[in-house]
Image 1 (tube, each protein chain N blue to C red):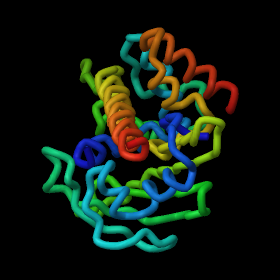
Image 2 (cartoon, each protein chain N blue to C red):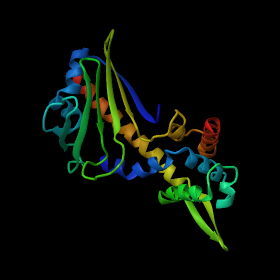
Image 3 (cartoon, chains in turn green, yellow):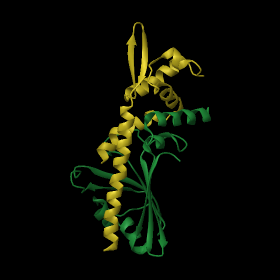
Length: 146
Length: 107
């Protein structure tokens, strides 16, 4: 488990409604603020243009990974598709599950770094004790593995 | 948001290596170190350590200072603080996107 962002949100709508909002490219575009050229298909590149105010000049490009109906939708996306970089794209995953009041959505974005274990950059991100503290974490982490 | 993402990719890549993390761990105490000091206790050669320091230097996590005939290396926390800010920003963007999704499906 590398460094990642995780979000959990409870939605008062049925799973089928949430699934459509995630995977129908027009609906996705409305809340994500991107105008997509065509439907999402696993294994296919999705292209479009951002509509987010201030970012309209940016292109959107993602590679759809998984579409497991009413369960998991995932794609990888790159920093800036115009730049031919060796950088690894991050992986975005939406998981949905039925709850008593509607749907629970779990979002993760991972791959910001390649540090193995859960203490690399994660330690920096949860920076509550200042840098010295975080550096001790790195030190012990590295020590454990060497 | 994508432009900001690109700007930080090399920083993250620079940290994706245990040798470099170990070097940072040594340097972050605040004192500058020579290559000999950094090589001591490591299985790696001086050349290998120099190469890793070069990667860290290229993203500004480490600076070299010349003292007489030798180069000494110092830690600079700023790029990492920037990376933390960047992840906080990505996190905040998701909060906003998901709240738009919530409004979208609940209406």
